[in-house]
Amino acid sequence: MLEFLWVWVFLLLPLPLLVWLLPAVKQASITAVKVPFFNHFWQSLSGVNQQTKWWLKLLAILAWILLLVAAAKPVWIGDAIALPVEGRDLMMAVDVSGSMQEKDMKINGREVDRLTMIKYVAGDFIQRRKGDRIGLILFGQQAYLQTPLSFDRKTVKTLLDESIIGIAGKATAIGDAIGLAVKRVRRTNDNNRILILLTDGQNTAGEIQPLKAAELAQKEGLKIYTIGIGADEVYRRTIFGNRRVNPSLDLDEATLRKIAKMTGGQYFRARNTKDLNKIYAMLDKLEPLAKEDQFYRPTKDLFYYPLALSMLLLLTLFRIRS
Figure 1 (cartoon, rainbow, N blue to C red):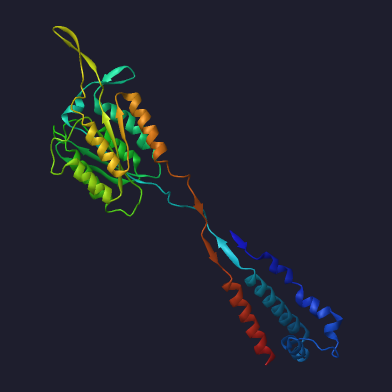
Figure 2 (figure 1 turned 135 degrees about the vertical axis):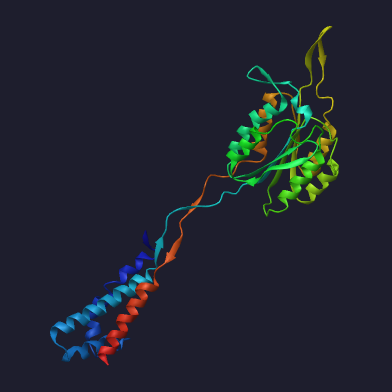
């Protein structure tokens, strides 16, 4: 739409008429600052027929109006355009090694393996992270980039849901997963770089040790939140009856804590679905969601159009006078 930034300029519209009607201006005996153009202009019209004279007066009035329109700074305000939301580069590294098939988790009373529980909870977390670029790394014996950093949260969630245990090997390469995340965020200019690493074991494979990879992450400004997955105890039926066992004996909590501390993150322990839900809710508070969408309206200056037309009319009147 069209808008004038200095609307008050239009108050000057009747100024020429006031100057013409003021008796003080018409008295030749009074010394005053005069604009000779108008006097010469009206004198030059003495030899012009009445109809032509009124057309020339009309052009002069139109030139004045256009000059005021230009001075009022007209702008054209375009449609609202959404500004990009300031979010984060958030990588998720999910352990899909053989140990993730341990069925020590429950969803709605049903026993499930650890990866299924992660899919169930992490899917909601991904959907909430509006404004963040999210990437997905799956790691076992090797680390693979399943999804590069993207605003397409639906695709990230779909590819997480389609992941299967053992797809990257049976062992666990925590260091390689961190190294791959560092490599991916290094290509971005975002200062808010986050890695959420979920694992149920310890580093048993890979080319780089976890703490060495954490040093690289620290240098690149990659904050790592580590989450240890696995129950403290489950009961297994044996020929001697039910036996209580700890399915998380292989979980290297000490290393996960060091990784988080080195990079400015935190370590969390998820013993069940409820714990993991709480952890993701806490992560939403630690790393708040992006602000609401903001918009701006592009503006285009239009003053030069009426100004150019006014100058053209004035040059025409000067030419007629001469």
